[in-house]
Length: 284
Image (tube, rainbow, N blue to C red):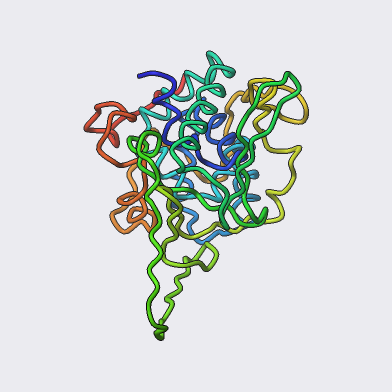
């Protein structure tokens, strides 16, 4: 699988969320542990879940990601892809970051990546003169995880908008709200991108110096002004033992998300394994 294929499912995610996925993927065992930890702590939301993850001994990236249980769930269910992404990122951070930029530019060219009420898309120039595409939440307090098919988003032009004038009519707007999210319309589509419920970011996640961030001009992920290298994983769980697999119950609230989100489309971006949930990462 090429690096471009590996990054395709997440290349259009907001920058800070993207950085946490990249760095967390370098330790697939911690991702599995995080997924199982979330299953046992579904009642925690916002700052409470972030602070509890910190006390449990998770890395800064996983502390951030536990605020996005749907993302962690996808990474766990597709652990072979997560491991492959982490290996590629460890071997060549710049190569992975360059691949992300190639996919973003492809999506722009097809008209499927543009600013919206959910996220802001800007083309900027790095110190070395190289252009890059930056994606940030339109509201820094709310992060929407884009949903898309990585097979078509980069190659299929955005649908043409047809405006039809009709007599005024009474309409009803239905609004939904997830227990851990922000109220939003049932689904908002921008080109071939769609957005579900936005995730509210707690105050604990606003410390830019604490979480890794993409430094596009330097071709890597930085942390506090320096290149980020994930620390050794030494969990300090209180009454919790690290898991070697991931088996969410059938009624897990994010399972329905997985049936619709981009990462479960039938394609080759996540390899050909038919028994992803049975994969175990052995601790060394």
